[in-house]
Image 1 (spheres, rainbow over the protein chains, first blue to last red):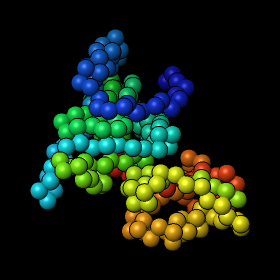
Image 2 (image 1 turned 45 degrees about the vertical axis):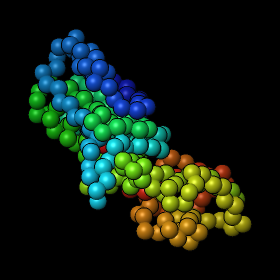
Image 3 (image 1 turned 90 degrees about the vertical axis):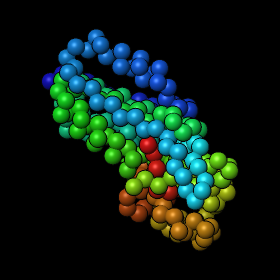
Length: 149
Length: 79
C-alpha cells in the first residue's frame, strides 16, 4: 500500500460547524471513486434540563496544541487499525448554541465495516484523550462543567 | 526556578485565573508541583487533575526545569 506522510492538522473551528461546510466536505469526496462507504458522526449541543434550568449553549476551550497532537495520534492509530481512504475531524471552540454542531467526524473507506468501526473508535478516543473542555451555559447565565460519560 | 502554570476549563474557573508564574528556590517534581497547587488552591482538590509539561502529558514523575510550561487539565469533556 502507498505510504503517505501525514502531519498534524488543526482540528478546531471557531463557533459551530455549519451544515454548509459539512455538505461541501461530502461533495469534495465525489472524485475519490475508490470510496464505497462514508461514516459521519456529528455531535450536536443538546438542550439538557438540570434542576429547572435549560442548557442554551456550550462554550468550548482546549489546550489546542495538545488536543491537535492527541487527535493526530488517534488518526494515525485509526489508519493503522482500519482500511481507510481518508478522515476529517473538526471540533468547535468558543460558544456553540443548542441545536448546532460542535463535532464532525467524517471517515471514508472502500467498505462499510471499516468506516463504521473507525468512526466509533475515533469518537470514543477523542472524548477520552483530547484536552477539550465544555462549559454548559444555562438560560439564567449560570454554568456547569460538562462531564463525559 | 520559575515555571508557568496554565489552568484549563473547570480548573481555571475554580482558581479564578488562567495562568500564573511560580518561583521555587529548590527543585520540584511535576507531582510535587501538583501537590503545591492543591495546597495553594484547596478548592481544586475535588477535581481530578492531569498535568502536561511543555505540552507532553505527564505519565510518571520527573523534576521540572526552569521555564517549563505546565498545563493543569481537569477531566476532558470534548464532543
